[in-house]
Length: 156
Image 1 (cartoon, rainbow, N blue to C red):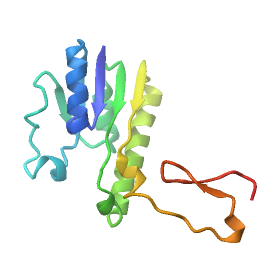
Image 2 (cartoon, rainbow, N blue to C red):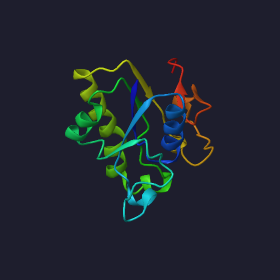
Image 3 (cartoon, rainbow, N blue to C red):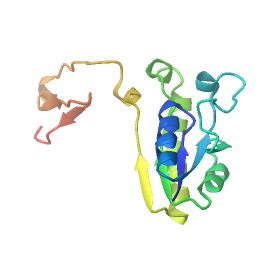
């Protein structure tokens, strides 16, 4: 089986690659090698196994995604810009990469389906710790969900 890991040159992706290689899978990685993670030279990380086929490209680029999907049987989608603080002032960039990038991948998969798809997320979506929400009388039925989201029970 041939597996594509989006964002696979990062810490988690490299470990996933190693596990897949150890189990006999062929691994391709699509990663943009962002300077924040990989340095200004944007070189192949030394920790990424040489058996991994690295394709440098942006998840928002439909052509790069289509090329990366060629002859793969499964996708593990790990691409995400991380950094809660930065996401608060680089909103368009983070939203574009994380949301539009996923949409671009899903659109490509709609015309080139795979046998298996795994989508993972980062702890960054949860924010920086617990925040208690003070509810007005009109929203008294809101409850704080354990993952940091306010969940409405539909009664108010």
